[in-house]
Length: 133
Length: 220
Image (cartoon, rainbow over all chains, first blue to last red; front, side, top):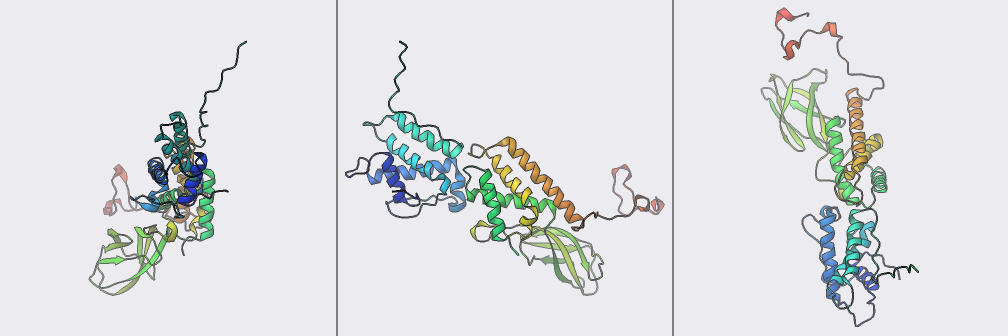
């Protein structure tokens, strides 16, 4: 199902898709993803204040529940918010997700806000070197 | 009349195409600054404001009726085009306080010709309250100004300082063109008229302005 990424619910659904965490009981709780989502928004404000200052001034939108509440992010900058949320969620997980992958999402998040191109995701498992035989 | 929606939308769309990853909110914010710079520096938005001079009163406050804020005064004239020397002694946007140099002893209906720029608050949806002719007439330099100013931003997906400087220069060229057109009253081939040099009755020798030359310098 395609996500329009216009509500808190659609953002969290897409984040769960990337995290491979769509079936309850969830590995990442709703609350932890909301924290990651709100934190990604704060980081986005640091990098791209124009996303928020004209609408909210010195305030920031904050979301305390996964609902269909509208998230006022313009189309072209919605995907970075997804990646930023994924990065924050992964950074808090120390069990089986390498920090390297979290960092890759964080770099993609930041690069999509501050550069034209996103940096490719770093492979989780190192690629085998070609044999010289 | 305010900026028309179709003109405004076209302008924002053109800017968004040239600025990858820019927000429309950011473009509108920058547009306000560019319009203010354009109108302030070109004197192209003027309004004739009627008011009545009463005897022995030299201070007047005039307010534009067609939007915008007064930036500077052109002149005060009556129906016979007689000038009344006046100066701006205070700005309280959108209005301005005028002071007539010489008091009159009769009541006179006059017009103050003022040059204006945009002022807050904006209209709905962050559209600046600017005249309807502005974008159709000067879209290209204004668009270049918005794109250039945003390209000069630091660490954004649309940052491009090299082309930003070129685009800002295109804005300044457009401002110079608009200022000339306004000065010539929109007349093709016109120019700001003045007496030929030989008819001049005052002098600026030595770099000192002499608005009231002594009799010995008359006819020089």
